[in-house]
Length: 187
Image (tube, rainbow, N blue to C red; front, side):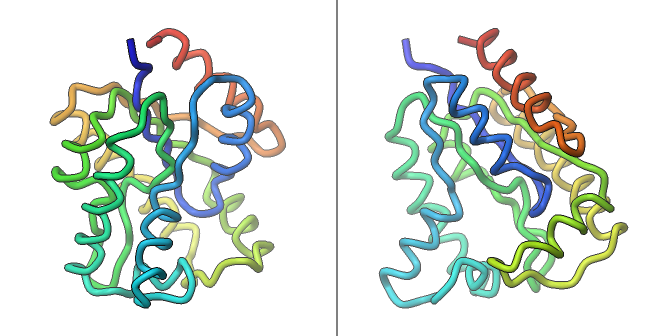
């Protein structure tokens, strides 16, 4: 039997990559980054030069890229999908996993990693590898809240569980071990 397909999400700077590195070591799941796959597809056809350019594309273009990426990931087994529940674009919040993506992915569980907004801001300030828009603690709090709403909405369509995982400062192993434990329960 195939293992559960899982989505793990969190706002930029929440420590998701660190937690995912630990989850990868503790499971047999492959990890695929949805945005990286979309970026590679967009770059191949000359639409963007860097990953942050994706959110600046038209909504229609973003949707087409989502469809292509979800079709590719939908053919994979035993996978953790590293993505965003929502994308803040110039037109407002765009679902990271709209119906056509969920249908392809067949997700069994959603994990939303969260951290204190002041910690997220601090992490973003020290990350020189990305070109992020300015944000306040209130913006981050709202983004995390919106992500919870989206996860709950996706769950309605998939019957998947929703898990809110706290990533405390300096202890990503706590978040990772919680995820690993819940994954083993669903195997």
